[in-house]
Amino acid sequence: MRIRNREVNVKKLIWYGGMVLLGLVSLSLVFKTHGLIWKNLVFSNFTDFCMDFFNHIRYVSGRNPYSYGAHACFPPFAYMIYYFIYRCIPSVEEGNPILWGSMREACIGNGQAGIYFVLLIYMVVITILLTLVLMDCKKGSKGEKVFFVFLIVFSSPYLFMWERGNIVILSNIFLLLFLWGKDSDMAWIRELSCLSLAASAGLKLYPAVAGILLLHERRWKEAGRTVLYGLAFFALPFLLFGGMDGFLQWKDNILVINGPNEIESQALSILNFINLLEVNMELQMPVLKKVLPFVAAIIGGVSLWGLDRKWKKAAVLCVLMIACPGWSGQYTLILMTGPLILFLDDEDRKYKWLEMLYAVLFLGLFSCIVQGEIKQFSTSCMVEAISLYTMFFLLILEGGCGLWRKFFTKRELKIL
Image 1: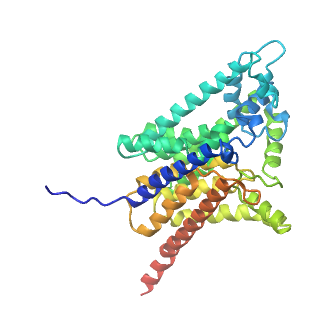
Image 2: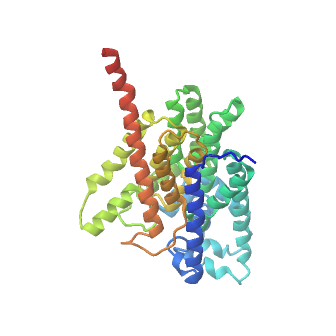
Image 3: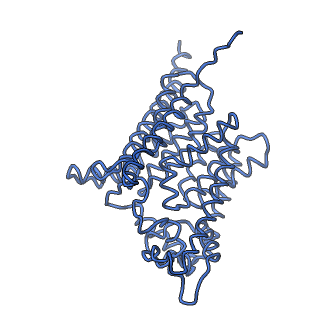
């Protein structure tokens, strides 16, 4: 009987195998320490469980969310969704204790615990939507798709996102729909992808950067319509939440939340790393804080024109979504899901050693690592940050080389 040797897909072997191995190691450590070891991955503030879900519902309960202060910083489209959820929560005459913030944990056993049922429904619906979208976006056998979804849902950034209850998950779903549908042969799916990108940016703003892909591909009309959709998703909901006054207050909140000076152990932005250097090296670098994110955005945007693979173009833009805002929590890494899918499904094996390196970096972004802190930084976040910025460096290096070949090599050939 003749057996045909099939080439092993090394990058899939590295990512899938590494995810399973590190997941099992982390699970054994969690069991051994009675759950204490993963405090810096999830449960970072257990007295405010799912804070990004309940707190923003509290902000919007009075239809004036931005008056609560800087932490009420989401665009109004997000507060439309939160307000709908708020209206579905049973209330009593004196108000609902769960919306009082720090007293939330006291609700259990006093008749108000039923409010967690709303959270449960929200999580189930979101998980179903995420699963359906991932199953459609991911190529391969049904078994591989199911395995991929399982690993993603229990990956490090997703676990932290579930614990925070952040609406970035819905923004990510819309971003995945954009990346999946923008190159479809069917016009209605391409139009749906434009709407999805607008909705994604309407929830979290920074996914708007992905619109550069349309400009890069010279799809001017689609880019123009996407801008119009985005303005509608962003501007019209302000009519429900304070109008122009609400917009001005939102602007002030955004400037405050994106200009922190304190180190966050679970943040990935460039600004947070500069803060880390300032504290540990006793330096003051205010100019670098202002300049470096803009320089990174420009270099990343320019390098896009020198990259040759779809996943690399998506990846460099998603890195910018995470790195350049002043505040960027560890859960924002879920935005790298789209580039990961494109990478695993990409069939180009031109530079296999580099492909293997990228697989290791994607493993660093999504693997579940539980440990303590290293100089005010959680271990999992440190691994993710190293992986993220190493990938960014390699991508802009590849993009620079691609631009050099495109604009200079050809000229030399013409002269010869």
